[in-house]
Image 1 (cartoon, protein in one colour):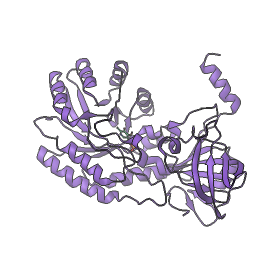
Image 2 (tube, helix red, strand yellow):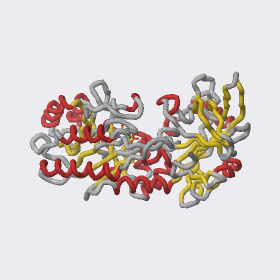
Image 3 (cartoon, helix red, strand yellow):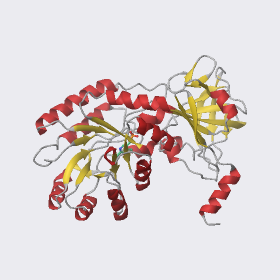
Image 4 (cartoon, protein in one colour):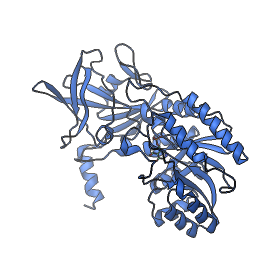
Length: 420
Ligand SMILES: Cc1ncc(COP(=O)(O)O)c(C=O)c1O
C-alpha cells in the first residue's frame, strides 16, 4: 500500500510531501535527511484538541519527541503549549518565547540543582516521587505543584514505553497518595494538578480509560481542595504501518469528556483538561531519506546497505518498531523482499528485515516513514557520522532547518568540544 501516511503521498508516479517531489528533492539535497511537514503537525495538534469538547482544554506537546527549534518556533506561533523534561528543554522553550504558564515540567529523577534552576524559570512542576515532593516542599514551602500518579495500568506499544504499573520508575503509587497529601500539607504545598501518563503508542483505548478512571477516583475536594487541572499525559497512537487500524479519537474524546464531566461534577467545579501528546503530534509528519550504496545476495537473502543507520533512527533497534519503507526512486518496481541495513559497525543495525519493498537498485533513495517522533531527538553521532540535515516544509516552502556537517567539520567539532 503506497498511501497511508498523510504527510507523504503517492500520485501514481512519485512520492510527495506537500508539493515537493521527494525523489527530485533527494537528488538535490545530500542524504540522509529528515523532512517534516509543518502544516501536518499543526493540523494534527488542532485536530486532536478538537476531539475534546470541553471549555478549557490544553495540549502540552511533549517536546522530547522532537525539539527542532524551527519547528518549536512555528508551534509557538500557532499556540502550542509544551511538556518538558530537562532544564535545557525549559531554557530553550523560554528562549523561543514560550510563556512559563504554557510550559509544564515533568521531572523524573531530578537533582536539587535542576529543581532550583527550573523553579527560577517560574515553571510548574509535575512531581513524581514522595522523596522529591518532600525536597520540593522544604525548599519551596507554600508553592504550587502537580502530582504525577502511577495509574496502575500497563499499556504501550513496547515494554520500554510502558510507564504505569508497580514496577515502573514513574509516578506516585495510588496506595501512596495519602502520603503525598500529608507531605503537601506539612509544607503548605497547593496541589493544583493531578497527572498520569500510562505509556506511549497505546492501541487499546480501554486501558487509557482505565488509567483515567483510576486517576479520577482520587479527585475529591477534601484531599485536593486547590485543583485547577487534571492531566492525562500523552500516549496517543500514531499509525506506523498500513495494516494498523486508525483510532477514532473523536469517539475517544466524547467518552473521555463524559467521564471527566462526571468527575468535575463530583468535585464541585469544572477543572481544566490537559494532555501531553508527543508521538501523535509529530510522528507521521516526517520521513527520513537514505540512499542505497550496496546490495548483497547472501545465499538468496538480499541485504541492502545504506548511508544511514540506527544512530539516526533508533526505534526499530530499540523498540522493535515497524517503520514503513518505500523506494522513492522506483515506486512502481516489483515488490521484492529485502533486509535494509545501516552503515555502523553493529550487526544489529537494521531498519527492516524480510520486508517487501519496490525493487531496489544501488543509488536508489528510500524513505523511512514516520520519522518525526523520537528519531532525530534520540539520534547520536555514534561511529562519528554526521547527523542528517533537517528540512521543514511549511506552506509549500522549504525551510532548511539544519545542515548536515561534513565529515571534516564533525571531526573538528569533536576536537573542539574536547578542547583540542
Ligand atoms: C510524562 C509524559 N508525557 C508525555 C509523553 C509523550 O508521550 P507520547 O509521545 O507517547 O505522546 C511522555 C513520553 O514519554 C511522558 O513521559
